[in-house]
Image 1 (cartoon, rainbow, N blue to C red):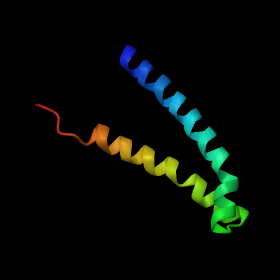
Image 2: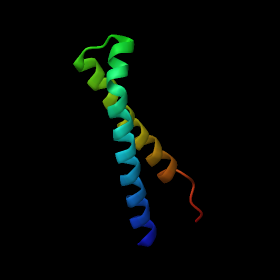
Image 3: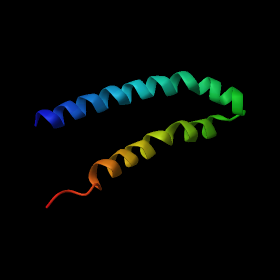
Image 4: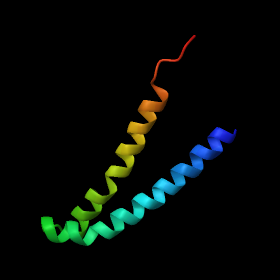
Length: 66
């Protein structure tokens, strides 16, 4: 139970950190690539689902001893 609680706390911290980094980069992404609001929203939203899926694959698909 302690491990699950610690993992959830770390995940919450990383989510907040990731959100603040992305929030600070939005204007730079829009200016550099000349994107509109819809395109920027799509680009900013994509890393979160893919990183969550990747972490789940690493965690849950590893071979477990019998």
